[in-house]
Every structure is written in structure tokens, then in C-alpha cells.
Image (cartoon, one colour):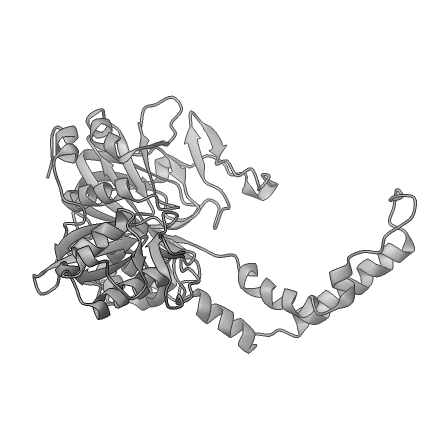
Length: 442
């Protein structure tokens, strides 16, 4: 479906958060790759080889509609969530680079022919966050799983490049022409690459100097496969695999990405825990008088030799049956897809007062519960809390900066909810870090 002009569509009134909740069942992987079986998908394709899976007879996925995206943008205007950003890109721009934009600019840039990329959309959509958690567990994936959303108008898209992640592209509406290699030119790269005018440009990573093994040759685009993706189609492209895409008319698509984790991230904490118990490791190489000579003296070489011996012994003490390694693997394949935003909180003593903590990004809005009843939703990052509609005056006053006694209600709001319900609300807000304790405001 096309909405022209987009500036009018994205500027029209749309209450924050008014979209239908997604039903995350735990079978999302099966539904996305049908008719492939998980065993075939994992053993033959995932992270290894590109695979196009046409929609066929399976039910079309509707993780995001343009209307839902608009509601999420309105939500993003209230929240400054670390990791979430909106970028724009013009396919024929000489610089051929993404540039960050504000939510209010989305419609105007789409009308100008830009592609819009919402990076880490799962950080502001709780249902997409649950989707990333479900896929991570279903694949026992030890890396990061996230969701980007791409909107393009006719001719929009990205020219030949490869990424550091596996991209599972889900075409939601419209059409997009994809051309892609079957296998990676550089498996599991540390940085992206793009090809322009026969030259390979590696992505910037100031903390990682380019090493010889990272340099790749031309993409051999003449050998690319080509397909036109339509609503419901899925394409999975491994990291380091050249690909390009161009919208045929309007296109709305999700990129469910899988960023692999280096095995050293699992192993090294186990090794380091064994080494830091040793005084010699914690102390470092022995100091010398007169500054460092041209070559390390015997005392320093002896230190190196002894520490390398320690390291080899510590590594040899770990094998494939080590419960510490198993534990690290289980934890990394089931943990949250983003660093935890949980806040350490302490239940206040009697007589304490609470006020809003402005350092935590959140927003609130009125929505419908699963039973169709009005309710108040308070959303922070990928999580949300739901309260009865009667609590709205209390929550609104709290958000506006009013100070409340812990476990109580100010007299002017005494009729909106019970003291017990107010205490539950304060405890929930404290646990989320949205409320903080203050002294007596009088």
C-alpha cells in the first residue's frame, strides 16, 4: 500500500502506541522458514549460504505495518532510547552514506526519494523485542539478535555491500529486487564493505586497524542470483556476503539480524578467572631500573615464559565437557538481546517521597487491554507496564513532576485508585528505575 505524500501520512494525528499487540508463540522460526525444516535451515543455510524462501502458501507475516511504524515514531519522539536511531540514505548520492535524522523528517525524506532505516526497532517495540528473544532461543544463538526496519520508494535501496551480520529479510509489503551472492567472500567479517566504481571501501572501525585477512576482492556481481521479493517472502544472507537491493515501487521490510559472537567472548572469562588468582599475573612484568633496553632482559623473558606456561596449563584444564563452558554457552544463547537496563533499587523506608527519574527514557499512553478495556501503558525501552485506566491521573501527575509519599496518594488524587494499588504502582516504577526517592518536599 502506498501513502503519497508521505509527509502528510507521517504528520497526521496518530495516538502514541495505538497498534495491535503481536502474538509471539515461540514458533516464529518455523513460520518464517516454512517449508524448510529447522534442521535443514541450520545445517545447510543459516550463517553459511544464502537462501530465498518464497511465501508460498504460508500465512503472511505482519510484524510491522506502516501505521504501526508511524505509531512507533510518535513514541520515539518521547523516548531517547540508547541504540535506537533513524537514518536516511539516497541510493544515487555521491557519498552513498547513511545520515541520522529526526522522526519528524521521515515523511519528507521519503517523498524526496530516500530510504529510511530504523535501527534496533526492537528497543522501542516490546513485541519485536520478544520476537528477537524467541528467535535467539529457538536457534540457541550466542550473539545479538535485533530488528531493523527499511522503507523505500521506487528505486530506493542500497548498492553492492556486505554486512557483519546474518540478515533475515522479511518483505512485509510492496516489492524489492534483490541481487546477492550465494556464499560469503569473507566469512564473519569485523567490518562492513561496499563496492563503488570497482573499488572496495571497508567500513570505519577506528578501534580495529585493518588487517591483511580483511581485504577482499571485487564482488563478482555478474554471478549474483536475482529475485523479486514480495509480501511474505524471506531471504537469509550470511555475514560477509555481497548483496544489493532496489525497491520496485514502495517497499516495507524487516531485517532480523544475527550478530555472531567471537568464541573468545565465551572462553576468555573462564581463562581470566583462573589466571587472576595468581599474584604474578596481577602484578605484571617486573620493573627495571634505567628504563627499557633494546631487548627484554633475562628477568623479563623469564616472566614471559612462566606466564605463558600458566596460560597453557589453564587452557589445557578446560575441555568440551567443562561445566563452566557449558554454563557460558547456555547463558549467552538465552540472555537478553541487549544489555540489561535494570536499575538497582531499594524499597524506601517509611516517610520517604518519590518523584520521576528523568534519566530513564520512557513514555506513557492510553491503550486497550487484551479484554478491550482502556488501560494506561508506561513503556521504557523494550519493556512496558500496564495499569488500570483509573490510575491515569496519578501516573500523569507523577510524569509531570509531582512528588508523592511512598505508599500513599496526595489528597487531590485520592479518588483515582486505592492506596494498595498506588503502592503497587510505586514499587513497579522504583524497580524500573523510573521513580527515585527524594526527601520531604516541604
